[in-house]
Length: 87
View (spheres, rainbow, N blue to C red):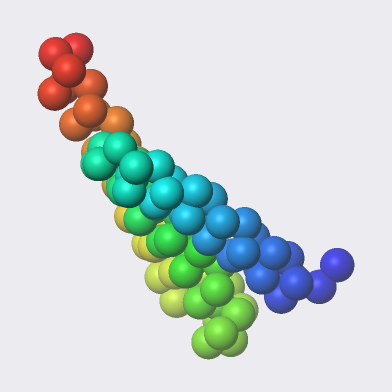
């Protein structure tokens, strides 16, 4: 399977997941869903950037920082939700 095909498939999957969480955020107003939607958008960008800009190794372009930002956003949102609830 071609790497660009796989990256495109993953990008589309991340975007669908992000739209799923965006739908729940619009329905409930819960910021946790907004954070998950934003994190999945970052993951989609993380998959698309190396293909679009011809970066052969994500470590060379620092593209992995997008993935790091996505995971940090998820961790922050979960901690914020649990702290606001009182533990």
